[in-house]
Length: 52
Image 1: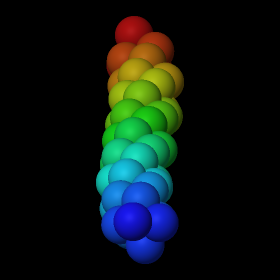
Image 2 (image 1 turned 180 degrees about the horizontal axis):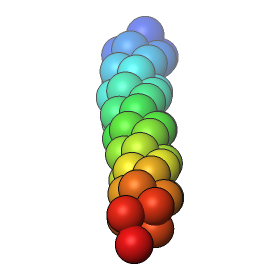
Image 3 (image 1 turned 180 degrees about the vertical axis):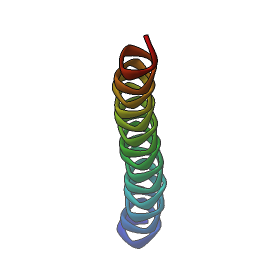
């Protein structure tokens, strides 16, 4: 019986780890996207400012 409990705990731990990794990866992707958007905004602002 202890072996079944150990296997169940192991499976739950793996599922939680995978979920955390997905959340962390999504946060990294969102951070990169926001960074690129801010950089593009400042670049466009610079180009528009030079055009005036």
